Length: 448
Length: 145
Ligand SMILES: Cc1cc2nc3c(=O)[nH]c(=O)nc-3n(C[C@H](O)[C@H](O)[C@H](O)COP(=O)(O)OP(=O)(O)OC[C@H]3O[C@@H](n4cnc5c(N)ncnc54)[C@H](O)[C@@H]3O)c2cc1C
Ligand code: SF4
Ligand code: SF4
Image (cartoon, rainbow over all chains, first blue to last red; front, top):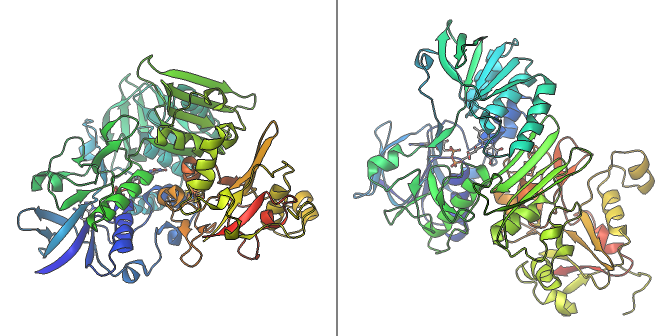
C-alpha cells in the first residue's frame, strides 16, 4: 500500500489552497489529491459565467494545466474516497484501491439540499452546482424553454440569470419573503429583485412549491402552496446546501453542522484536518464555529489547514459571511451581520439620489456588518474593519461617506496600516531614506 | 520586492498621480486621447483628501494578499519573479470579490475593459511607476525590500 505524507480529499478551493500552502513549507513530502470529478480543479462559482458565454471552458480552470505536475501532486481524478480509516491511517476509493496517509485533509465541500417535495424524486432536474450541470443546462437550452427555479439564494439566482441569458422564460419561487435573504437586507433584496423583474425574470416570494408532477424528462408541472400551477420544461432545485460530511461521520469524526475543527483546522482526530464548505470553523463576527459556504472562506481555511499540516502551527484568523453579487448591472457587496437579530445593534443607513445604498451595522464600538449597493468601490476597507474587530468609535460618522477611507483614520492607525503593516517596511516610511529606490526625478520642489 | 509608499506630509492633493496612472493604463498612453477619445481606464491610485491632509494610495502588494485567496477565478496571483500581486484581465470575470476583501480599497471596476477589475501593477513596462515618476513633490516613493 502506497503511503503519502499528505492526502487531500476533494479538489476545489479548499483543497488547492491547502496544496499551495503545504508546498510553500514542504517541497519534498509526498502529496496526493483525490477528486471525484474527472476534471482538474475549476472554479465552481464560474459555472453561470460559462453558461452565459462570458468565459469559455478554458476560463473555468482555477490553475494552469501543469499545476499538479509542477507542485508534484499525485492527482487522482475521477476517484471517490469511500472509506477513511482513522486508526490504521488508510483510505479506500470507489475502485477499491487503498492508500495510507500520515496527514489527511477532508475538503469534500457541499452538496445541494433536496427538499422533501412530493414528486421530486420521480423528476429530472438540475441543481446547478457543477461543470457538468452547466453543460447540461447549455445542451437543454439550445432552444429557449420555460424554466422554474426553486430557491432565490445565490445559486438559484445565478441559475436564473444563466437561464435568462439563454433566452429562457424564468420563474423563481422563494419561500422566504425576499430574494437572496442571507446575503442581503430587505432594501437591497428589493433593489436586486426590481432589476431582475425589469429584465424579465419573474420573481415570486413568500410562496413555495408543494408538489411537482413529471411530464416526462425534465418537463413537469409545479403546484404552489396557494394552489397555483406552473408548467415548466426545466426545473432547477436550489434551496440550500449542506456540508458533505458522510465520510467524516462514518469515520467517527466529531461533526455538528459541519466537521468540527479547532483553530488549526484540526478535527477531533489529531492528524486529520478539514476545510471549506464541509467544515465548521471559527466565525469571528459570531464568535463561534459556523459553516460559511463561500469560495474565499474555503480558500482561506484550506490555506491554514495546509500550513498546519506541514508543521507550522498558525491559527486560522477566522472568517465571516460575505457576499459579492451583481445582477443586471447592480453590484451589491455585503459582509458580516447585515440583518441584525435584535436591537442591541445600531444600524446606520444612507441612500444616495442615484439609487446608491449603503448601510453599516455597529455593536458597541465594533463594526459588525456592512452592505453597499451601486457604488461598491472601497467597500473592502469596511470588510477589513469588521475582520480586524477594530474600534470604530472615532470614525463611525464617516463610515458611510462616499469618500470614506484611510484619511478618516487617526494618523497612527493609518500609518500602521499603510506603511508598517506591509511587512518589512516599517522603517522605510520613518526616515530611513536609503531604502528608497526612486521618487520623481527633477521635480519642481526637489532638493530637500 | 518593490513597493510604493505615500508620504502624506508632502502630498499636495494635485491628483497628478491619478492622471498619469490612467494615461499609463490607457490604450494609447496619450493623455489627450486617453481622456477625450477612449474609455478611461480605472485609476489604480486613489488620492484621499480631507481638509489639508491628502495622500495617494495604491495596492500594497500585501504579503498575505486577501485578494489572491479570495479571487474566484485565479486571476489574482503573486508574480514569482517580482513578488508583486498581479491581475490577469483575461481570467477575471468581474465578480468583485477582490473589491469586497481588499483592506485598502485598492481594486476598482475597470470600465475600459469588459467586466473586470484593475489595480496597481507597479507599471511593469517602466523603470519607475508613472505615479511615482510624475509626482511633483516626491510624495510617492518607490522602496525596495
Ligand atoms: C453556481 C454557484 C455559484 C457560486 N457563487 C459563489 C460566489 O459568487 N461567491 C462565493 O464565495 N461562493 C460561491 N459559490 C460557493 C462556492 O462554490 C463554494 O463555497 C466553494 O466551492 C467551496 O469550496 P470547497 O473546496 O469547500 O468545496 P467544493 O467546491 O464543494 O468541492 C469539493 C470537491 O470535493 C469532491 N469530493 C467530495 N467528496 C469526495 C470524496 N469522497 N472523494 C473524492 N472527492 C470528493 C467534490 O467532487 C468536489 O469537487 C457558488 C457555488 C455555486 C454552485
Ligand atoms: S489589491 Fe488589495 S488585498 Fe490585494 S495585494 Fe493589493 S492592497 Fe493587498
Ligand atoms: S473580480 Fe476578477 S480578480 Fe477580482 S476576485 Fe473576481 S475574478 Fe478575481
